[in-house]
Image (cartoon, rainbow, N blue to C red; front, side, top):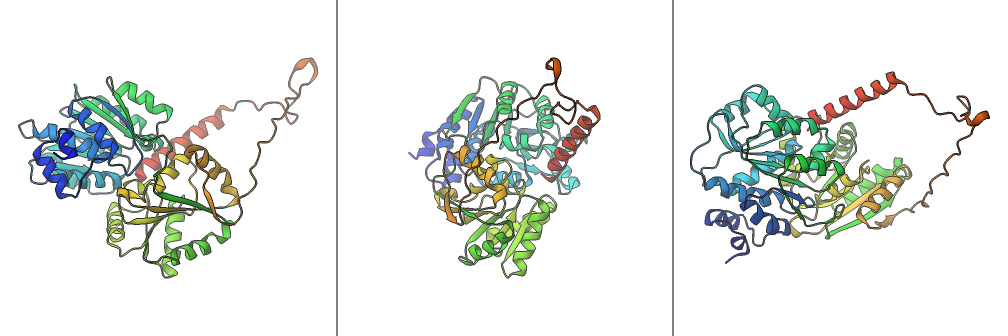
Length: 429
């Protein structure tokens, strides 16, 4: 009896995963699969690269195979939501590998692709639909898909969906999915809002946690070079030149920065490409295929676009610019050391980014080793300014320490800016 068989999986799935080279289940698979087969709701916490897709995909497929009957037109039996196009496509590829030779039909829907083609595919009915929230709601509003027949709902990388402003879309989708249902929520981090979502969407959930929030993969060797901003490009070229045969992933903070850096590296003789929100889905797919096949050795990416990169051969991750959110560092370096391999994570840190590095070290509980340059002296917080008072204990006039009055117009402008930023992030995903 194999370890997967001991988890309760049937012969069809055991044969499929054996053909894919799976031998032993990962910790998240070992703990989650039996619970999903029992029909329990789950709140799973595990870092990227730990096999979450199989943890929810295999038991859901087994439950669908046990039920007879084809799905009705424009309906689905299971719905899986993910924040980015790449992650949706990666999940769909894995599920199709698991269901090969079975009647299970998997469809994926993402932005940036022909909506007409997706409408045609959904018209015949789907056993499993994997989708980004924005495109899914677009299809629902066009009456191309109904969700009332779905009895399984999966929210994968839920923390990233919150970061991208999908909270309102998730609430709307949850109301449309059928009842009773099984809901599975998986996330690499567990912000406060996640518990609020779990309380609303999940029924008596089992918490499955196989890693500490913020914990990085054990086989990733992390280091930092302290360098002036203007010297970063030269240093990156040196590091990449030291091992030109390696598959290297380079992170930039913005779409424009990623594109510019990729072109600069290409002009310097590196086989490089880029993926970010300004690229069409076809461009992103072709670039990832070239990277996976080794035609491109250096891939420059932004955080949003990189969530679906699952390539075991990535040996180096370079943080050309540190992320503004410390948790994203964990996701970035999780792109290497996958499937039990070892990897290198190298950060290029300017003086202005040192505070971001300290945030990362606090989150991970690690002191990242210095590979080059000198670590700046730790900055101490400036003492709080004393509030000065005028006569009768009243604050002094404006310009002498008095608090600024609330400006409704400025507040409304800031709210609009936040809405536009979240909208752009959702469109990019």
